[in-house]
Length: 488
Image (tube, rainbow, N blue to C red):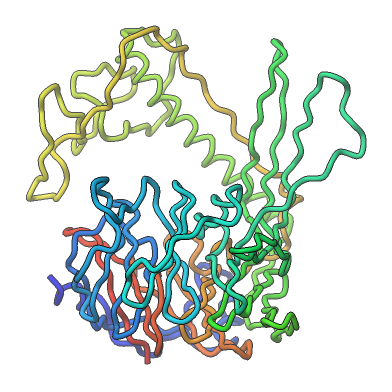
Protein backbone atom coordinates (compact mmCIF):
# COMPACT_ATOMS: atom_id res chain seq x y z
CA UNK A 1 0.00 0.00 0.00
CA UNK A 2 2.84 2.38 0.85
CA UNK A 3 4.41 1.94 -2.56
CA UNK A 4 1.15 2.70 -4.31
CA UNK A 5 0.68 5.86 -2.24
CA UNK A 6 4.19 7.08 -2.96
CA UNK A 7 3.65 6.38 -6.65
CA UNK A 8 0.87 8.95 -6.66
CA UNK A 9 3.47 11.68 -6.18
CA UNK A 10 5.97 12.68 -8.86
CA UNK A 11 9.45 14.14 -8.32
CA UNK A 12 9.64 17.83 -7.53
CA UNK A 13 10.41 19.27 -10.93
CA UNK A 14 9.84 22.54 -12.70
CA UNK A 15 6.55 22.69 -14.61
CA UNK A 16 4.89 25.44 -16.61
CA UNK A 17 3.15 28.04 -14.49
CA UNK A 18 -0.50 27.23 -13.78
CA UNK A 19 -2.65 30.11 -12.62
CA UNK A 20 -6.14 28.62 -12.75
CA UNK A 21 -9.19 29.50 -14.81
CA UNK A 22 -8.48 33.13 -15.66
CA UNK A 23 -8.38 35.31 -18.74
CA UNK A 24 -5.60 34.94 -21.29
CA UNK A 25 -4.06 38.25 -20.21
CA UNK A 26 -4.11 37.20 -16.56
CA UNK A 27 -2.47 33.88 -17.41
CA UNK A 28 0.21 35.66 -19.40
CA UNK A 29 0.86 38.00 -16.48
CA UNK A 30 1.04 35.04 -14.11
CA UNK A 31 3.59 33.24 -16.28
CA UNK A 32 5.85 36.30 -16.24
CA UNK A 33 5.43 37.11 -12.54
CA UNK A 34 7.66 35.24 -10.11
CA UNK A 35 8.89 31.64 -10.25
CA UNK A 36 7.09 28.92 -12.14
CA UNK A 37 4.86 26.47 -10.29
CA UNK A 38 6.47 23.20 -9.24
CA UNK A 39 4.63 20.08 -8.23
CA UNK A 40 5.34 18.62 -4.82
CA UNK A 41 6.71 15.10 -5.06
CA UNK A 42 7.95 11.80 -3.80
CA UNK A 43 7.03 11.01 -0.23
CA UNK A 44 9.93 9.78 1.90
CA UNK A 45 7.48 8.14 4.31
CA UNK A 46 3.74 7.38 4.48
CA UNK A 47 1.84 6.33 7.60
CA UNK A 48 -0.18 3.13 7.83
CA UNK A 49 -2.03 3.91 11.07
CA UNK A 50 -5.82 4.09 10.71
CA UNK A 51 -6.61 7.79 11.14
CA UNK A 52 -9.94 9.58 11.27
CA UNK A 53 -8.43 12.94 10.31
CA UNK A 54 -5.20 14.91 10.54
CA UNK A 55 -5.93 18.31 12.02
CA UNK A 56 -2.27 19.28 12.36
CA UNK A 57 1.19 17.92 13.10
CA UNK A 58 4.18 19.08 15.15
CA UNK A 59 7.71 18.03 14.20
CA UNK A 60 9.96 16.92 17.08
CA UNK A 61 13.71 16.19 17.26
CA UNK A 62 14.94 13.08 15.49
CA UNK A 63 12.30 13.16 12.76
CA UNK A 64 9.49 12.25 15.17
CA UNK A 65 6.14 13.94 14.76
CA UNK A 66 3.02 14.52 16.85
CA UNK A 67 -0.18 13.86 14.88
CA UNK A 68 -3.48 15.36 15.99
CA UNK A 69 -6.34 13.04 14.96
CA UNK A 70 -9.31 15.19 15.93
CA UNK A 71 -11.96 12.83 14.58
CA UNK A 72 -10.86 9.86 16.69
CA UNK A 73 -9.67 12.20 19.45
CA UNK A 74 -6.11 10.92 19.72
CA UNK A 75 -2.71 12.58 19.82
CA UNK A 76 -0.20 10.15 18.34
CA UNK A 77 3.58 10.08 18.35
CA UNK A 78 5.17 8.73 15.15
CA UNK A 79 8.81 8.04 14.38
CA UNK A 80 10.78 9.18 11.31
CA UNK A 81 9.18 6.43 9.21
CA UNK A 82 5.71 7.61 10.33
CA UNK A 83 5.14 4.45 12.31
CA UNK A 84 3.10 5.02 15.48
CA UNK A 85 5.30 4.53 18.54
CA UNK A 86 3.01 5.95 21.22
CA UNK A 87 -0.36 7.42 22.08
CA UNK A 88 0.19 10.68 23.95
CA UNK A 89 -3.52 11.46 24.49
CA UNK A 90 -6.40 9.06 23.98
CA UNK A 91 -10.18 9.32 23.75
CA UNK A 92 -10.68 6.55 26.30
CA UNK A 93 -12.08 8.12 29.46
CA UNK A 94 -10.39 5.67 31.81
CA UNK A 95 -6.84 6.60 30.75
CA UNK A 96 -4.83 9.17 32.64
CA UNK A 97 -3.97 11.24 29.56
CA UNK A 98 -7.45 11.78 28.12
CA UNK A 99 -7.77 13.67 24.84
CA UNK A 100 -11.03 15.45 25.67
CA UNK A 101 -14.45 15.65 24.08
CA UNK A 102 -13.55 18.19 21.37
CA UNK A 103 -10.76 18.39 18.82
CA UNK A 104 -7.72 20.02 20.41
CA UNK A 105 -5.06 22.29 18.93
CA UNK A 106 -1.28 21.81 18.67
CA UNK A 107 0.77 25.00 19.07
CA UNK A 108 4.59 25.08 18.67
CA UNK A 109 6.15 26.45 21.85
CA UNK A 110 9.63 27.88 22.24
CA UNK A 111 12.37 25.38 21.47
CA UNK A 112 11.04 21.89 20.97
CA UNK A 113 8.21 22.10 23.48
CA UNK A 114 4.58 21.98 22.37
CA UNK A 115 1.33 23.41 23.73
CA UNK A 116 -1.81 21.33 23.56
CA UNK A 117 -5.08 23.26 23.96
CA UNK A 118 -8.16 21.34 25.09
CA UNK A 119 -11.12 23.64 24.33
CA UNK A 120 -13.54 21.51 26.35
CA UNK A 121 -11.69 21.69 29.67
CA UNK A 122 -9.94 25.05 29.01
CA UNK A 123 -6.63 23.34 29.79
CA UNK A 124 -3.26 23.89 28.13
CA UNK A 125 -0.84 20.98 28.35
CA UNK A 126 2.87 21.74 27.98
CA UNK A 127 4.56 18.78 26.27
CA UNK A 128 8.34 18.42 26.46
CA UNK A 129 10.48 17.33 23.44
CA UNK A 130 9.81 13.68 24.36
CA UNK A 131 6.02 14.33 24.16
CA UNK A 132 5.60 13.90 27.92
CA UNK A 133 3.25 16.21 29.83
CA UNK A 134 5.55 18.58 31.73
CA UNK A 135 2.96 21.03 32.99
CA UNK A 136 -0.74 21.86 32.88
CA UNK A 137 -1.88 25.46 32.56
CA UNK A 138 -5.23 27.12 32.00
CA UNK A 139 -6.32 29.16 28.99
CA UNK A 140 -5.61 32.79 29.93
CA UNK A 141 -9.03 34.05 28.76
CA UNK A 142 -11.84 31.51 28.70
CA UNK A 143 -13.96 33.72 26.44
CA UNK A 144 -11.32 33.41 23.68
CA UNK A 145 -11.21 29.61 23.54
CA UNK A 146 -13.18 29.44 20.28
CA UNK A 147 -10.80 31.87 18.55
CA UNK A 148 -7.78 29.86 19.72
CA UNK A 149 -9.20 26.44 18.79
CA UNK A 150 -10.38 27.28 15.26
CA UNK A 151 -7.16 27.86 13.28
CA UNK A 152 -8.72 27.32 9.86
CA UNK A 153 -11.07 30.24 10.47
CA UNK A 154 -9.02 32.58 12.65
CA UNK A 155 -5.39 31.73 11.89
CA UNK A 156 -2.89 29.41 13.53
CA UNK A 157 -2.02 30.42 17.11
CA UNK A 158 1.63 30.70 18.10
CA UNK A 159 3.98 31.76 20.87
CA UNK A 160 6.06 34.94 20.64
CA UNK A 161 9.56 35.66 21.94
CA UNK A 162 8.18 36.63 25.37
CA UNK A 163 6.42 33.29 25.77
CA UNK A 164 3.01 34.87 25.20
CA UNK A 165 0.17 33.13 23.37
CA UNK A 166 -0.64 34.86 20.05
CA UNK A 167 -4.03 34.49 18.37
CA UNK A 168 -6.75 36.49 16.58
CA UNK A 169 -9.93 37.89 18.09
CA UNK A 170 -12.80 39.63 16.28
CA UNK A 171 -13.54 43.33 16.65
CA UNK A 172 -16.72 44.21 18.51
CA UNK A 173 -19.33 46.64 17.22
CA UNK A 174 -19.62 49.91 19.07
CA UNK A 175 -22.89 51.33 20.38
CA UNK A 176 -25.29 52.83 17.82
CA UNK A 177 -25.03 56.55 17.09
CA UNK A 178 -28.79 56.80 17.62
CA UNK A 179 -30.45 54.46 20.11
CA UNK A 180 -33.31 52.36 18.70
CA UNK A 181 -36.87 53.06 19.89
CA UNK A 182 -37.94 51.58 23.21
CA UNK A 183 -38.75 47.89 22.91
CA UNK A 184 -36.86 47.47 19.60
CA UNK A 185 -33.69 45.35 19.92
CA UNK A 186 -30.47 46.45 18.27
CA UNK A 187 -28.76 43.98 15.93
CA UNK A 188 -25.28 45.35 15.16
CA UNK A 189 -23.48 44.29 11.99
CA UNK A 190 -20.18 42.55 12.75
CA UNK A 191 -17.15 44.74 11.93
CA UNK A 192 -15.03 43.57 8.99
CA UNK A 193 -11.84 43.63 11.04
CA UNK A 194 -10.10 41.77 13.81
CA UNK A 195 -7.06 42.04 16.07
CA UNK A 196 -4.03 39.80 16.48
CA UNK A 197 -3.25 39.83 20.20
CA UNK A 198 -0.80 38.31 22.63
CA UNK A 199 -1.57 37.34 26.22
CA UNK A 200 0.73 36.45 29.09
CA UNK A 201 -0.09 33.15 30.80
CA UNK A 202 0.80 34.50 34.26
CA UNK A 203 -0.35 38.12 34.28
CA UNK A 204 -3.29 37.61 31.83
CA UNK A 205 -2.39 40.98 30.27
CA UNK A 206 -3.66 41.28 26.69
CA UNK A 207 -1.61 43.23 24.16
CA UNK A 208 -2.71 44.15 20.62
CA UNK A 209 -0.04 43.39 18.02
CA UNK A 210 -1.92 44.49 14.90
CA UNK A 211 -5.22 44.60 13.06
CA UNK A 212 -6.40 42.56 10.08
CA UNK A 213 -9.21 42.87 7.57
CA UNK A 214 -11.78 40.08 7.92
CA UNK A 215 -14.55 38.99 5.54
CA UNK A 216 -17.74 41.02 5.60
CA UNK A 217 -20.66 38.94 6.90
CA UNK A 218 -23.76 41.16 6.54
CA UNK A 219 -27.30 40.17 7.43
CA UNK A 220 -30.76 41.62 7.17
CA UNK A 221 -33.32 41.69 9.98
CA UNK A 222 -37.03 41.11 9.37
CA UNK A 223 -39.92 41.44 11.75
CA UNK A 224 -42.86 39.05 11.49
CA UNK A 225 -46.52 39.89 11.91
CA UNK A 226 -46.40 38.28 15.36
CA UNK A 227 -43.67 40.69 16.47
CA UNK A 228 -40.72 38.29 16.27
CA UNK A 229 -37.41 38.97 14.49
CA UNK A 230 -35.49 36.83 12.02
CA UNK A 231 -31.97 37.27 10.68
CA UNK A 232 -30.96 36.25 7.14
CA UNK A 233 -27.26 36.13 6.33
CA UNK A 234 -26.21 37.53 2.96
CA UNK A 235 -23.81 35.24 1.14
CA UNK A 236 -20.48 36.89 0.37
CA UNK A 237 -19.39 35.65 -3.10
CA UNK A 238 -15.90 37.09 -2.77
CA UNK A 239 -14.75 37.47 0.85
CA UNK A 240 -11.59 39.52 1.27
CA UNK A 241 -9.34 39.30 4.28
CA UNK A 242 -5.81 39.78 5.51
CA UNK A 243 -4.05 36.87 7.18
CA UNK A 244 -1.23 36.36 9.63
CA UNK A 245 1.23 33.85 11.07
CA UNK A 246 3.75 33.55 13.92
CA UNK A 247 7.33 32.73 12.89
CA UNK A 248 9.81 30.68 14.91
CA UNK A 249 11.57 33.73 16.41
CA UNK A 250 8.27 35.24 17.57
CA UNK A 251 7.92 37.66 14.66
CA UNK A 252 4.29 38.11 13.60
CA UNK A 253 3.76 38.39 9.83
CA UNK A 254 0.68 40.17 8.47
CA UNK A 255 -0.18 39.37 4.84
CA UNK A 256 -2.22 42.19 3.28
CA UNK A 257 -4.69 41.26 0.57
CA UNK A 258 -5.13 44.71 -1.00
CA UNK A 259 -1.59 45.01 -2.41
CA UNK A 260 -0.30 41.50 -1.59
CA UNK A 261 2.61 42.38 0.64
CA UNK A 262 3.83 41.33 4.08
CA UNK A 263 4.29 43.41 7.22
CA UNK A 264 6.63 41.94 9.83
CA UNK A 265 6.27 42.87 13.50
CA UNK A 266 9.55 41.91 15.15
CA UNK A 267 9.77 40.85 18.82
CA UNK A 268 11.04 44.35 19.72
CA UNK A 269 7.96 45.95 18.15
CA UNK A 270 9.58 47.33 15.02
CA UNK A 271 7.56 46.94 11.82
CA UNK A 272 8.99 46.39 8.35
CA UNK A 273 7.24 45.79 5.05
CA UNK A 274 8.09 43.64 2.06
CA UNK A 275 7.72 44.80 -1.53
CA UNK A 276 4.50 43.87 -3.31
CA UNK A 277 4.56 40.21 -4.26
CA UNK A 278 3.99 39.27 -7.92
CA UNK A 279 0.50 37.99 -8.63
CA UNK A 280 -1.71 37.72 -11.76
CA UNK A 281 -4.43 40.11 -10.61
CA UNK A 282 -7.79 39.63 -12.30
CA UNK A 283 -9.96 42.72 -12.72
CA UNK A 284 -13.74 42.45 -12.34
CA UNK A 285 -16.01 44.93 -14.09
CA UNK A 286 -19.65 45.52 -13.14
CA UNK A 287 -20.87 42.81 -15.52
CA UNK A 288 -18.51 40.26 -13.98
CA UNK A 289 -19.73 41.12 -10.48
CA UNK A 290 -23.38 40.86 -11.48
CA UNK A 291 -22.78 37.49 -13.13
CA UNK A 292 -20.99 36.24 -10.01
CA UNK A 293 -23.77 37.27 -7.62
CA UNK A 294 -26.44 35.86 -9.96
CA UNK A 295 -24.58 32.53 -10.11
CA UNK A 296 -24.21 32.35 -6.34
CA UNK A 297 -27.87 33.23 -5.89
CA UNK A 298 -28.98 30.52 -8.31
CA UNK A 299 -26.77 27.93 -6.57
CA UNK A 300 -28.17 28.99 -3.19
CA UNK A 301 -31.75 28.65 -4.37
CA UNK A 302 -31.05 25.22 -5.83
CA UNK A 303 -29.43 24.06 -2.59
CA UNK A 304 -32.29 25.48 -0.51
CA UNK A 305 -34.87 23.75 -2.72
CA UNK A 306 -33.03 20.42 -2.45
CA UNK A 307 -32.91 20.73 1.33
CA UNK A 308 -36.58 21.69 1.45
CA UNK A 309 -37.72 18.72 -0.67
CA UNK A 310 -35.55 16.30 1.34
CA UNK A 311 -36.94 17.67 4.62
CA UNK A 312 -40.48 17.30 3.24
CA UNK A 313 -39.84 13.66 2.29
CA UNK A 314 -38.61 12.91 5.79
CA UNK A 315 -41.52 14.77 7.42
CA UNK A 316 -44.12 12.94 5.35
CA UNK A 317 -42.68 9.48 5.92
CA UNK A 318 -41.56 9.77 9.53
CA UNK A 319 -44.79 11.34 10.79
CA UNK A 320 -47.31 9.66 8.43
CA UNK A 321 -48.31 12.92 6.73
CA UNK A 322 -49.43 13.72 3.19
CA UNK A 323 -47.54 15.84 0.71
CA UNK A 324 -49.06 19.34 0.41
CA UNK A 325 -51.33 20.01 -2.52
CA UNK A 326 -49.47 21.18 -5.61
CA UNK A 327 -46.12 20.21 -4.04
CA UNK A 328 -43.62 20.12 -6.91
CA UNK A 329 -40.19 18.59 -7.17
CA UNK A 330 -37.66 20.66 -9.15
CA UNK A 331 -36.35 19.20 -12.38
CA UNK A 332 -33.24 17.11 -11.86
CA UNK A 333 -33.85 16.51 -8.15
CA UNK A 334 -32.21 13.35 -6.82
CA UNK A 335 -32.62 12.31 -3.17
CA UNK A 336 -29.47 12.04 -1.12
CA UNK A 337 -28.35 8.57 -0.07
CA UNK A 338 -29.81 7.14 3.12
CA UNK A 339 -33.59 7.14 2.67
CA UNK A 340 -35.32 3.79 3.35
CA UNK A 341 -36.36 1.71 0.35
CA UNK A 342 -40.05 1.66 1.30
CA UNK A 343 -40.47 5.42 1.72
CA UNK A 344 -42.98 7.19 -0.47
CA UNK A 345 -41.46 9.83 -2.74
CA UNK A 346 -43.38 12.79 -4.18
CA UNK A 347 -44.45 12.78 -7.78
CA UNK A 348 -41.51 13.52 -10.05
CA UNK A 349 -38.84 12.01 -7.76
CA UNK A 350 -37.34 8.54 -7.85
CA UNK A 351 -34.39 6.66 -6.45
CA UNK A 352 -31.36 6.50 -8.81
CA UNK A 353 -30.12 3.10 -9.95
CA UNK A 354 -26.97 3.29 -7.79
CA UNK A 355 -28.80 4.61 -4.72
CA UNK A 356 -27.60 3.56 -1.25
CA UNK A 357 -30.75 3.00 0.81
CA UNK A 358 -31.16 3.42 4.53
CA UNK A 359 -30.69 0.30 6.63
CA UNK A 360 -33.84 -1.57 7.51
CA UNK A 361 -34.62 -2.44 11.14
CA UNK A 362 -31.94 -4.82 12.41
CA UNK A 363 -29.81 -4.54 9.23
CA UNK A 364 -26.10 -3.88 9.67
CA UNK A 365 -24.15 -2.03 6.95
CA UNK A 366 -21.29 -3.78 5.18
CA UNK A 367 -18.62 -2.46 2.81
CA UNK A 368 -19.16 -3.73 -0.74
CA UNK A 369 -15.92 -5.12 -2.15
CA UNK A 370 -16.69 -4.04 -5.71
CA UNK A 371 -17.38 -0.37 -5.03
CA UNK A 372 -15.95 0.18 -1.50
CA UNK A 373 -19.32 1.73 -0.53
CA UNK A 374 -21.62 0.73 2.35
CA UNK A 375 -24.50 -1.64 1.59
CA UNK A 376 -26.86 0.65 3.52
CA UNK A 377 -26.76 3.75 5.72
CA UNK A 378 -27.80 3.54 9.41
CA UNK A 379 -30.91 5.53 10.27
CA UNK A 380 -31.06 8.19 13.00
CA UNK A 381 -33.03 7.39 16.11
CA UNK A 382 -36.42 9.12 16.16
CA UNK A 383 -38.27 9.81 19.39
CA UNK A 384 -42.05 9.41 19.21
CA UNK A 385 -44.03 12.48 20.14
CA UNK A 386 -45.80 15.45 18.68
CA UNK A 387 -45.50 15.97 14.95
CA UNK A 388 -43.26 18.95 14.17
CA UNK A 389 -44.46 21.75 11.93
CA UNK A 390 -44.28 21.22 8.18
CA UNK A 391 -40.88 22.19 6.68
CA UNK A 392 -40.63 25.51 4.92
CA UNK A 393 -38.27 26.86 2.28
CA UNK A 394 -35.42 28.79 3.86
CA UNK A 395 -34.65 32.26 2.61
CA UNK A 396 -31.51 32.92 0.60
CA UNK A 397 -29.82 36.18 -0.21
CA UNK A 398 -26.56 37.46 -1.67
CA UNK A 399 -24.57 40.62 -1.06
CA UNK A 400 -25.19 43.37 -3.63
CA UNK A 401 -22.70 43.19 -6.47
CA UNK A 402 -21.77 46.83 -5.81
CA UNK A 403 -20.12 45.73 -2.54
CA UNK A 404 -17.69 43.33 -4.25
CA UNK A 405 -14.03 44.32 -4.76
CA UNK A 406 -12.73 45.34 -8.18
CA UNK A 407 -10.09 42.57 -8.18
CA UNK A 408 -10.18 38.96 -7.12
CA UNK A 409 -8.27 38.70 -3.84
CA UNK A 410 -4.97 36.80 -4.06
CA UNK A 411 -5.81 34.55 -1.09
CA UNK A 412 -8.64 33.68 1.26
CA UNK A 413 -9.13 33.32 5.00
CA UNK A 414 -6.87 30.82 6.77
CA UNK A 415 -4.45 30.74 3.82
CA UNK A 416 -1.14 31.57 5.53
CA UNK A 417 1.16 29.18 7.41
CA UNK A 418 4.71 29.68 8.71
CA UNK A 419 7.02 26.71 8.13
CA UNK A 420 9.88 25.55 10.37
CA UNK A 421 12.46 27.46 8.29
CA UNK A 422 10.89 30.91 8.72
CA UNK A 423 9.20 30.94 5.32
CA UNK A 424 5.57 31.86 4.78
CA UNK A 425 3.30 29.59 2.76
CA UNK A 426 0.39 31.46 1.21
CA UNK A 427 -2.40 29.46 -0.44
CA UNK A 428 -3.18 31.64 -3.44
CA UNK A 429 -6.51 32.28 -5.13
CA UNK A 430 -5.73 29.84 -7.92
CA UNK A 431 -6.71 27.05 -5.53
CA UNK A 432 -9.99 28.54 -4.30
CA UNK A 433 -12.12 27.81 -7.37
CA UNK A 434 -13.63 24.35 -7.92
CA UNK A 435 -11.33 22.07 -9.89
CA UNK A 436 -8.34 24.39 -9.67
CA UNK A 437 -5.09 23.04 -8.20
CA UNK A 438 -3.96 24.11 -4.73
CA UNK A 439 -0.90 26.33 -5.16
CA UNK A 440 1.19 27.93 -2.41
CA UNK A 441 3.44 30.97 -2.78
CA UNK A 442 6.52 30.44 -0.59
CA UNK A 443 8.03 33.69 0.72
CA UNK A 444 11.32 33.92 2.64
CA UNK A 445 12.07 36.06 5.67
CA UNK A 446 13.16 38.94 3.42
CA UNK A 447 9.71 39.07 1.89
CA UNK A 448 10.86 37.55 -1.42
CA UNK A 449 8.72 35.08 -3.36
CA UNK A 450 11.20 32.32 -4.21
CA UNK A 451 9.03 29.27 -4.88
CA UNK A 452 5.54 28.23 -5.98
CA UNK A 453 4.42 24.73 -5.08
CA UNK A 454 1.35 22.80 -6.21
CA UNK A 455 -0.10 20.05 -4.01
CA UNK A 456 -1.04 16.72 -5.58
CA UNK A 457 -4.81 16.32 -6.12
CA UNK A 458 -6.57 15.21 -2.94
CA UNK A 459 -3.73 16.23 -0.61
CA UNK A 460 -3.89 18.81 2.19
CA UNK A 461 -1.06 20.70 3.88
CA UNK A 462 -1.02 19.86 7.61
CA UNK A 463 2.40 20.95 8.87
CA UNK A 464 6.15 21.34 8.49
CA UNK A 465 9.46 20.08 9.74
CA UNK A 466 12.91 21.73 9.71
CA UNK A 467 15.04 21.47 6.60
CA UNK A 468 12.21 22.06 4.08
CA UNK A 469 10.12 19.10 5.22
CA UNK A 470 6.38 19.26 4.46
CA UNK A 471 3.65 17.03 5.89
CA UNK A 472 0.54 16.34 3.80
CA UNK A 473 -2.59 14.33 4.51
CA UNK A 474 -4.16 12.17 1.84
CA UNK A 475 -7.03 9.70 1.51
CA UNK A 476 -7.25 6.41 -0.35
CA UNK A 477 -9.55 3.38 -0.16
CA UNK A 478 -7.87 2.33 3.10
CA UNK A 479 -8.39 5.63 4.87
CA UNK A 480 -6.41 8.76 5.71
CA UNK A 481 -2.62 8.79 5.77
CA UNK A 482 0.19 11.19 6.63
CA UNK A 483 2.95 11.73 4.04
CA UNK A 484 6.32 13.36 4.62
CA UNK A 485 7.83 15.27 1.68
CA UNK A 486 11.44 16.43 1.50
CA UNK A 487 11.53 19.49 -0.76
CA UNK A 488 14.52 20.27 -2.92
